[in-house]
Length: 81
Image (tube, rainbow, N blue to C red; front, side, top):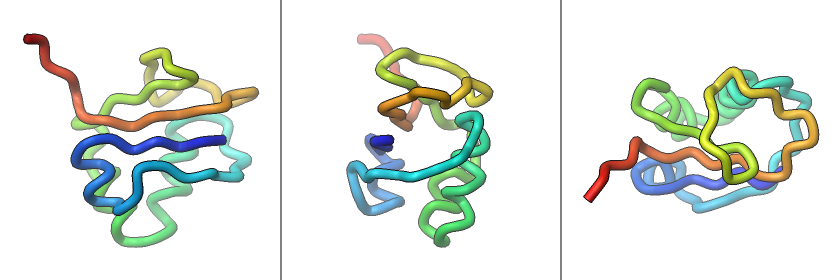
């Protein structure tokens, strides 16, 4: 699946997107896998309350299932304006 990183998440990880092969069942499981990769991932995902997630371009929660998902995006909360 494509994993996209936006704003400070992208800055901490150092890349805007990547292809990830995973057997994770949920977004939270994927985050746990990513955090084990390197310190930069651990830093980016250290506070999930400061992150939002979209699965196939729909805002969702970290307990969302990943079965059949093509794209997941992580970004900070959005503000109106």
